[in-house]
Length: 340
Image (cartoon, rainbow, N blue to C red; front, side, top):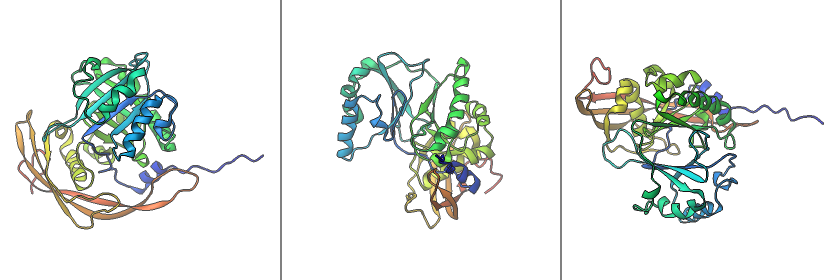
């Protein structure tokens, strides 16, 4: 018998080789829910054997009503998992100007997860889960690394080494961080990919050597350009692309600023913009005593040929690319601009 030797082509390798920018590819929502679901995972996730059947039924009913909470799964970990309890992490944006998501963490009795989460998923639970809420740990970060090979081979191939490097770093209490293997959150062609919470910032095309600089907030601006995918706190499209450019210009100081995005003509990846769009932000950085505005023009810049999925055979498509440029700001020094 002849073995099947068809070579899997990896969409992440194709994307990287094409020069495709990861900017503007973050999944946006104002509320994210992460639920502890022990491995193994299937696709669809909530058909996995370790998902309480009742929770699957609750979600299926919501989907039938066209209600789609931003819910993901993360794997158990011996250091943080509590027997017979399910950890639930909730992140939300509740202010008009923000620098990160607010976090609420719960430990729910596993046999009651579906019962307790039905109203929670609808955001109608009020204070009903307060008895299960965990103490907030100031400054702690949760790194969610997609390793879900059931969705695409890239996530396991490129994501797992990133997870292992970060997980080793998490054993150092000085880092004040946890690291979780996470289910799919889009953009596997940018694997290895991860999202840092509560900041809500997505990263892609990661190398294990990037992990120390990212955790220490020392990744240089030129690598921010090739690794940063976007901020989950603001919509995709021109607004997210503009924010990516501002982070790449200002560096890590930008992530400490309270930001209020203005209204911009929206576009999505199915209907990309064909004309320049202007996006405005106001911001305040208390540590530097700077506040003001910045206007960014996002301009279409052709396409690159890339692939959406991995496999023995792949379908290439043309991904639109963009250039973002600051055209006006009240504080050019903050964005390291000599003059405008």
